[in-house]
Image (cartoon, rainbow, N blue to C red):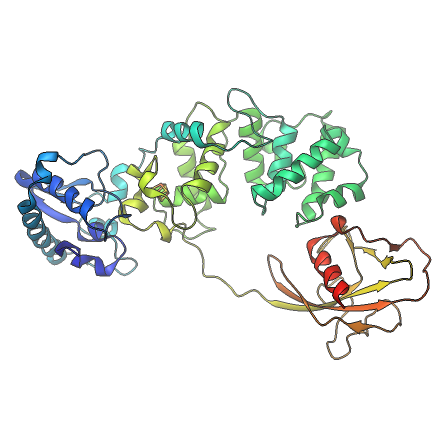
Length: 473
Ligand code: SF4
């Protein structure tokens, strides 16, 4: 590795940490030599290019990145200057670190932006904030944006029914999972009033497998409200949308922007990531949400209001990904504070993770001589609310208690129960569940509507796992 990068030991971006100070008359040559160095050194490939800050009247500080300045071919030959540049850079580095009032490796993070702040000069990020180019995002979106069944492109607007349905489905769920559900829903219920008049159990069964079943109940109620109270037309403003069951601030903003072209603030987890990195927002989530929303509002353009949030979401998904973002080819990378400091993986700042509590429970699978199983509908409120399920115990307050030493004490009826060899593991948002599976096979055919042929596609994921495990017993 070349000499100036001695300074890299303290953080992810050696150039940013070093913040080399260079006498102005030598600047041009050093920049080009620096780019040559950058091009040659595998140690910094991936850290970005090189940029400039005026920090003092007679000095420039070389920080991270400068995509706008191209290396001069003539200078590429000046190997000698590379060596000089390194020496001067090291001297500059020493000057920075020993300057009065400078804490070179500050308490929170030892990155170049912080060092620059300590020097009393503009930080790398501050220099380019506000330069966020919506045009660059739109150019990227026009070439690389996804084609999705609920999506239109400005000036066309997607039907509010489609936008709302997709946004509710996309809460906590990835696009690839949602697409077949969206297509199935819109095939069964082409208009919102078709959905509103559908039996609740059909809606719940069609939703099965998407998880977070309260969403499906709210979806159905919201459809009924739109049909009954608004004559089948969605409210267009965020306040009106938020009055619908299951529609929170983000979803209301997304519908207002995407379906009605309103200039709302639309900040989902993907857009949060882009804003947090671009502006190097150090406030941890969720406290940072308002700040991230302010940044979004500041960079939001007046044109293509329905495209902008969708373009940013696609961009976050394809380029500014949670891990290994594609910063080198990023259309807005030139102004990205995290990229300049080499701290992309530190944003968004998240609160410390809490360990998920563990829960234990049991499910009872009783099968009669006709192959039908004893089924229940879960209570309307609570886990798997309103969904078809096998009787169970122990894992929610709504279920009977479960004692692992007496596993069959909560069985729905006395029978020759046996435990399956395998247990079912399932992770919910707030807890992890381990579930025993008790099975009994009856010799007679049982009466009653609760004995049903099992429709696996209509079961929530946990109960699908229970059914599979019971099948192996
Ligand atoms: S991809 Fe990299 S450069 Fe672009 S916004 Fe994300 S972190 Fe910044």
